[in-house]
Length: 43
Image (cartoon, rainbow, N blue to C red; front, side, top):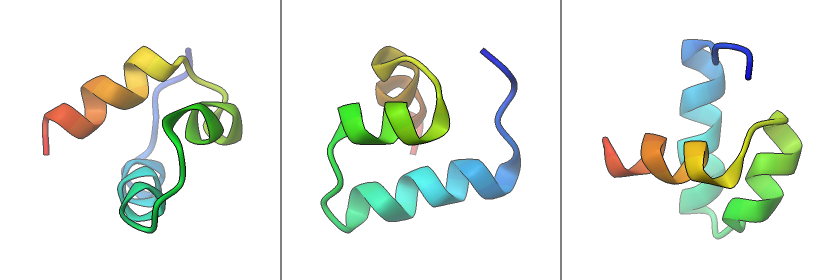
């Protein structure tokens, strides 16, 4: 997994708030679903 930029992290949060699924976000940002879940749990 490559390190996410600040802008990518913000994008993940915003897309999730708009209802995008975790699996879709994982594919969009080329990272594992568990990493998306972890990132969102920190917010």
